[in-house]
Image (cartoon, rainbow, N blue to C red; front, side):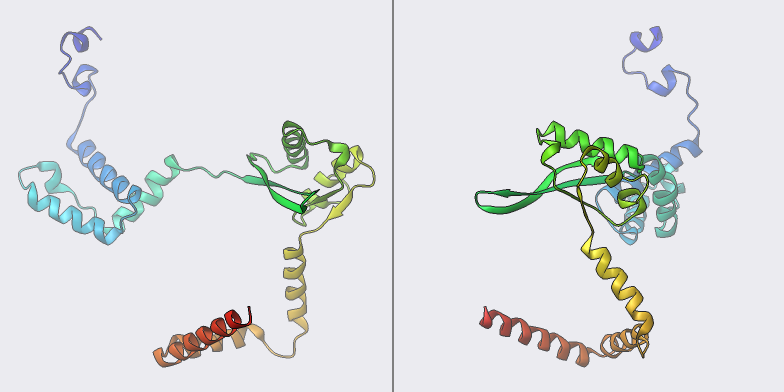
Length: 231
């Protein structure tokens, strides 16, 4: 520490006796360039071109001369080296409320919360905390709606079951999107033709022909114009 304070201009790696090898310099340079590419949403092809330009602009630099970071290597560094240390999976839970007012029924997002553990107890505690923190009375809660998973609406130990213990008579709301999804999923099994094959054939018909694609675009434009006239 004394040597570093005595000579402020002294490099930190020298002051603390950190060995900086050519390989470390090369790895740091490649990592920094890939980080710059990812941060500014540049393509890996653009990254490879930038590396080639830098090598031509600084031919006297041994580090620059040895950089071999094409688009394939850049992607590997971004996905397998930088991403694990810079990102983390975060579960976010939106708390949405719907209520009666003098202007009618209103709804909106009350708060987004970060949910580390998706257990019934943790979800129940966090949702209850958000409601109370916003000065909403639990005894005025009429219904609780959520995704149709066992954690949320199971019969034994779920978020709804825990709220129902506090509020007997609470109405269980279901996710209409999930109901529709399950209806289509199970209804598809009883169709007399393969809907997936039909959709693939329709897609193939339009994607391989610019003429067909243009005809479809014109049709959509016509429908949109027709609907605007009706409105």
